[in-house]
Amino acid sequence: MKARTLKKDKVNIITMGCSKNLVDSEVLLTQLKGNGIDANHESNSTDNNIIIINTCGFIDNAKQESIDTILQYVDAKERGIVDKVYVTGCLSQRYKDDLEKEIPQVDAYFGTRDLPALLKKFKADYKHELVGERLLTHNAHYAYMKISEGCDRPCSFCAIPLMRGGHVSRSIEDLVKEAEHKAANGTKELLLIAQDSTYYGLDLYKKRRLADLMRALSDVNGIEWVRLHYAFPTGFPMDVIEVMKERSNICNYLDIPLQHGSTDVLKAMRRGTTREKQEELIHSIRDLIPEIAIRTTLITGHPGEGEKEFEEMVDFVERMKFERLGVFTYSHEENTHAHTMEDSTPEEVKQERANHLMEIQEQISYELNQEKIGKTFKVLIDKKENGYFVGRTEYDSVEVDNEVLIDASKHYCRIGDFVEATVTDATEFDLYADVK
Image (cartoon, rainbow, N blue to C red; front, side, top):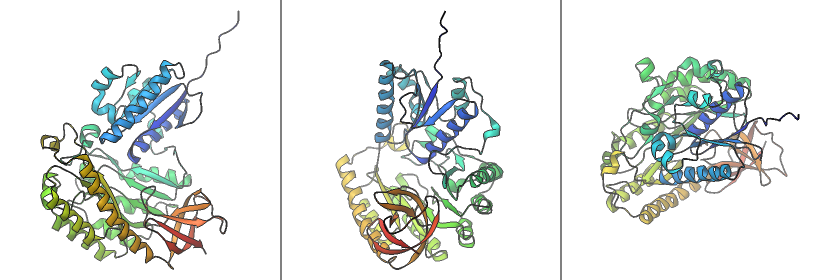
């Protein structure tokens, strides 16, 4: 009698949304592999028979993209291409009951903090000894580091607390251990991320300790850049800027989402601040580190934003001259405070306003980049693309900011290495450079 051959399971993890989700997928990948399970991240292989989709539920476009991806793999399951489809992340945390009714072909839905339950589907255990030993899904020279989970802020437009829960900091000891492991495996840049990084430590240590954490991470041998993202402006701890100034391997870079430039809209957003306080904070930061690159994000079309309030935001952008800016249109999210307000601005008007702000920002960015011509910067090489080696200065984060383009026909660079590059030309969002 011929023995039946059992095909070994192969798992493919698909990640939607932000860098925080990517970290969660990397943790899941590490746990699966640590349990001896054949798992990959966004593999193009055709022999993956189990799919895990890590969803995003932040705004309408992201939710639709996640749903479309679920439907794509459910269809593949029904056609016999894959055996099982599991869904995790923010969308399934927020809409699990609805999803189970609407897409019952999914084998199981999990929330954002259900990793042990998901692992049980593979007869796997959560291995605490793997904490800090995260497998990266990209080049090892940079790594996102999630310093906390969840958020306690009451922002009117934001559904993150509904999906991620309250703020929970990771300990400085655990984060240093993770940084040491990353550095030993070739990581040179740590990108600190959280829903609210300035709140770091309040729950664990009864006081804000972001500056202490940054100091401890900058002491890790092999870490050449520490970069700070998602700093909430209200109650911003200025000792963070002091540490940034004193430590050469902490990037002169701050990602601080301000969301609006009108005090009335900031009040409607429940941000706990005013335009004047935001301007004062930016001036204080620039007084301490004049060369700092400040990235912010703004939202157009929030309830309460009329033409007057939008013009105030235009003036705010023109006055502040942010080095980096992203603009989003307001998304009317159920179960948020803003959902009780009337979403009266048409979508096309929201988009027109966003486009107008980005046109202003393009000119600001162009003028700031023109000032860099002839100057030399330390550049970290990320990739080779379209005949150029592509890198970043300390003033630029991965994927969202300016890039430095080095002609590969004239210069050779190794991906993951730092080079000294002199800027020869500049556009709104790119710098062209020669290597010394």
